[in-house]
Image (cartoon, rainbow, N blue to C red; front, top):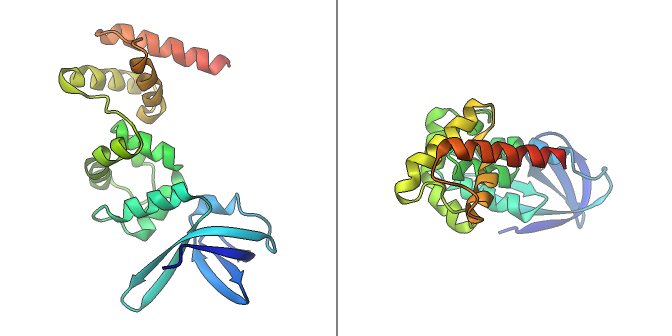
Length: 201
């Protein structure tokens, strides 16, 4: 297993880059967001990698930080999500944004990823929600009898133009500090006030 490459960036494009290590050029598959943060050709670089072996096909996938590699490997474990689908997700979303989308059941956000349809979005939420909540320390917003109230609050904020994954961290913080009540109408106002305060900063 090749865990990482440390060498010189020779060339790159939106789909792959070539890294020279001790005179050997490695072709590394990347997601499109990586291209915008790569150093100029000729620069020293370290890339976290994942080697995929399928029949007689060997492909090396590269990520500039460990968090992206961890998410890539997590996505490969979802039925129906291959390496290309995982790269599409990473191209469209940073890991933390993806985790928040899953934790908040934000299927609409997932549907903005090229190649992700409604069934795939539902499968991602179903297969990863519990695992992500444990790994990332994200508590569910739907515990016990409060489930319908949290769902109603999220739906109301969606109707006002906010993405679930956008307001989810805010609601979680307010919930942790006991700033929310048991009335959806009151909570909508409280969340909007907090959001307005954030925008002023």
